[in-house]
Amino acid sequence: MTTDPAATRPHPRPDGAVIGIDFGGTKTEVALADATGTLVRRIRFATRPEQGPDQVLARAAAAARELTEHARAGLGLPVLAHAAVSPGVIQPDRILLTPNLPGWENLALADRLALELGVDSVAMANDVRAGALAELRRGALRDADPGVYLSLGTGVSAALTVGGRVLAGAHQASGEIAYLDPGHPAGAPAPGFADGRAPLEELVGGKALAERSADAFGEELTAGRLFTSEHPAARWIARQALDVLATAVANIAVLVDPERVVVGGGMMAAEAVILPALAGRLARAVPFPPAVLPARFTSDASLHGAITLALDHLRVPAAH
View 1 (cartoon, rainbow, N blue to C red):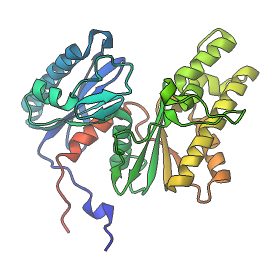
View 2: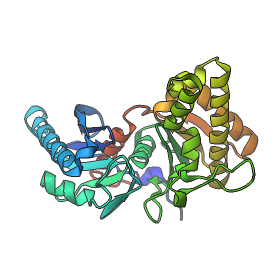
View 3: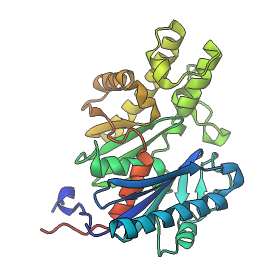
View 4: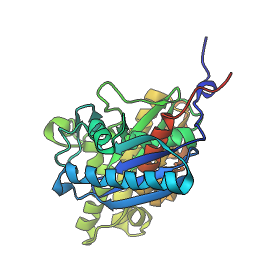
């Protein structure tokens, strides 16, 4: 017997609110949402990663308590679930591959947050996979099985959705496509993780593109400006990056056979250039090309992911 994921998709309880926390290398945001996922109030502050994790955890907890009081006094709702997201490979007792958050490598984030908040548990996920969850539940990946979520920003990452879930992987590291080997003109493998390198990200990530444009023009250009520039050097940089990215996405699609590829992240300022380039390569390279769509949550995807993760902990099976 097969199970229709839609038949068992959980439904939110209408009698409470949730809080989501999005930790980033630059900023941290804490948000209150109702049971539909609609953001009611949010608090944003600088992460100050150089000061270590304790201070940002304390400030996040204080913001969460403020929002909890607003839910109680202003909305008449209890906060029934908390969730947080962070960059990196999040394991129960540590967070790996997150150089922008020094001191987090030995942090049991879920346990620490639960202690700071005075609650039994806090749901936890990688920020990009949380963004994929938001798209799966409430966005462009809804009812797609399987689906691929592609996040293009300062770095690059992805997530695979299967059977109504986001695949985490054996080590909570599924979707770390920054480490894909894009190949080398001479045929030798590119330097990889063991060399302290992220080969794909170094070619197509927003930070790498900004550095390359600075070398060419003496000015760091955003992906939006770089990909839409008419300057020959900019067009060459953009064409090379898009070719490498599209090849990687096509290879993923051949392996997974997704119904849809959904693209989000800050580089979607150049959506008009990026999406056709991906769709064109997929049409040529993939036996059954998936649809290529923009994400619903092109901004604040991680925060919406944290809210969605919290909502998943409120839900009960649908009546049959």
